[in-house]
Length: 502
Image (tube, rainbow, N blue to C red; front, side, top):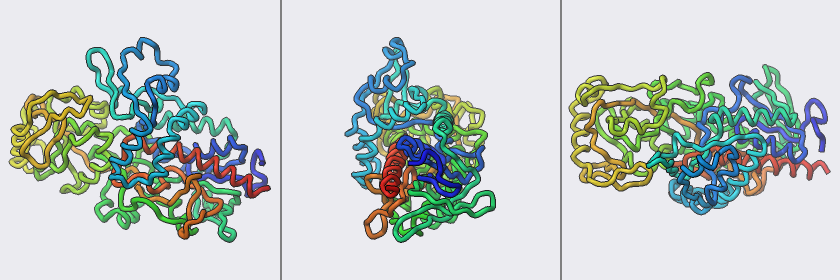
């Protein structure tokens, strides 16, 4: 196959998008010998898709701590001796996927994600991606040892910024061409086969022919109209946590070409984020700095002074992606996370950033006086919660069963009375990350037509793969899914290109 494009308008493979999934697809296709063009709608300084904004946590299966140490040669023996690391087997990962998605995840896609996760992590390391232990968000120190929990002990070095910096560096090393300010508008077809992409580049319409096309340009979370139509009218009010350029273009192009819709189109990944966060992702302040994910140690109240979720139902990894929409349902789409000084030192680092919005007072009455809420109901709810807290051993490293009795909703774990000042209130709203609806994708990353056959020449990866996440999401699975299915789509596209060029 050609080392580079054969002429100014033809490539072996065109990859649409430049996030984690897209670049993994481009790199794996290049490994197979394909000439690759990457198309990115955004300008260069806003490249990287949603991946640029993540905190880098990535969920994969591993047998034991030795598997993790193979990814991080800089961890010393002395450091390793202070770490308590539970195993996270493929079966545990699969069970987590099925449990948090109410058993709706496509079994074949889920097995691929789980079973290819560790080999893909090693592959990423081989292409220059660096990993580190996720001390800040996934461990607690106890008696001189760091106890990890939740199946998510690893993140990419320097968060999503570091991940994308490494992948773009590798793209450059491999000589893969990227066009910025280049929006894919339409898939070209010859009969039932995709043969290229119509691109709008700096005001000019171009036809780019390709032996195969990989779509990895995200979902529709940045398009208000599509959010309203697919998820619900209230979602127009949601903050867009990531890139403003994920407006469903790839999904629309694929559906117009005959692809089958698949997955949870009425669902999305959303979180509780700072009420004063930017309305779209700010590329000058990336790194997922506005999220507020220590809520299992809090109680959350709305403006009417009512609690509305079981904050301690599970580790935050398994509830945060569905609790965002619960906040969106509250009056003015706002809630308040309440903490006292017993737990304040345990909160994640995002609570200490200068961007964090919060209120503080030495007594609860003074705290509530600062908030635009029903003060009587707010204080009454806190009092009722305090009286409902049961005895037990408080331990945030496990589901400790220290809960409440006699209130609804209950708090199942990590319930402490809110009684030691000073007290803190962090206002949060809903931020949407990506929508769960996508395309039906086969075992080799190929896009499937409405009649069940493959849409020849078209492959998809990342957020565009439907059927994995339903209503909820195990933390860190998005980056892993992007890498697994990106690598797979690139390989498959290259093999297909070789086949039709013979």
